[in-house]
Amino acid sequence: MKISGTFDPNADAIIYEGHCLDLLSMIPSDFVQLIVTSPPYNIGKEYENRLVLDDYLAQQREVIEKCTRILKSTGSICWQIGNYIENGAIIPLDILLYPIFSSLGLKLRNRIIWHFGHGLHASKRFSGRYEVILWFTKTDKYTFNLDSIRVPQKYPHKKYFKGPHTGELSGNPLGKNPSDIWEIPNVKSNHVEKTIHPCQFPVELIERLVLSMTDENDWVFDPFMGVGSTAIAALMHKRKAIGAEIKPGYNAITKERIALAEKGELRIRPRERPVYDPNGNAKSIPPKTIELNREFTQLLLFIENEDHQ
Image (cartoon, rainbow, N blue to C red):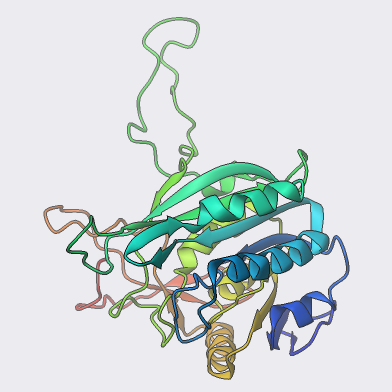
């Protein structure tokens, strides 16, 4: 696998250490099929400087404009975002950012709710347990591979009981559309994918976007790459990855995770594992290992103390 530290159209992965605007200036127009990221929320995390809200939105506009330029006509942008908090009041950033995307001619296809079970506990309002993915396309002719991301039917053996299709399955045998509400565990302390990043993407969240919105050998770009979960999700499904990250430590972890995946030693939470229910009796599914350029394989050893989230 060829990994480059600067833009190289012949690389398999481009892991750029620096500001995303610098990398964006190197990328040709109409080059990438999918842009997926979670930008800073302007709440003072270790990787950002808190700005006046108008300055933050201006900063986001500049990045979004440059991202739109490099996006193919069949491509998608997925901007995963949460809330900005000011004087104890929350401001939904997806509402503030929508006009920027709309002004650039992008079309909102879904406002996906990512629901997760863990987070800070509030005492003066309900605890926040969801964030939003805004999915935009550049044109009306866009890639969407629904069959690649179908989930099990609630009643897989249900059949028509009358009419011309009596006795036939009433649902798609490949499964159902996963809808626009996704329950996927966030990466907390005992998650198998946990690194030092405080707001890390779970790989399975990005897998669903990569599989549905790209084809093999397409480029996937993350302008705020963090520790490389987007790159992992792209590479494991035979796509190519581009990402920028300003923090050297996070870049080092991305490269380490890719190296582990090349050796077949990187563990992830499998997409087919159900969300843990302490009162349920669902069969536990252990982590999976990724080996790049091959189908990723399930661990043979059952991890007794593995977290079930």
